[in-house]
Length: 138
Image (cartoon, rainbow, N blue to C red; front, side, top):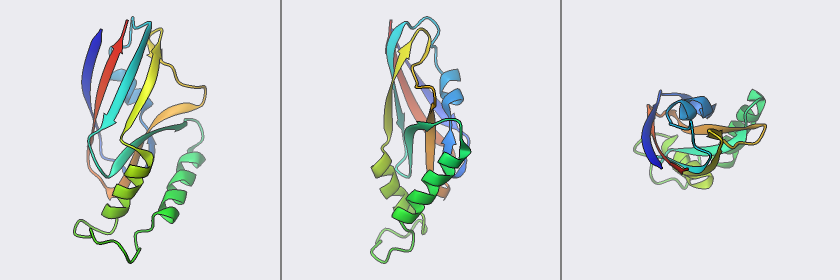
């Protein structure tokens, strides 16, 4: 079986946000014994990742590290028309990536005990974000 859904996420502030429940609720996972889910974000200033799903400190620490590693005030940025946070957001998005592939088993995402799906919002005001979810399986 194949299924596709477009998931529209409400706007969130800059940071790393758990979206696992929103992804799961948008998909027909019931009855899929074995499969794969491909998630792709349709934006160049946000990304997707798998990481810690329990401690909010992990999300805050990731945000702190990325803000330090990819500084907004770098003198070499040329793409600056859309604001100070735009070009750094593109760099962060390239580093993390726009897509995930997650195993599906017995009707659920096959995530590790402490894994969750993150929306990594790299803009101060990124707006709604759209994901394309493609599910294949039996």
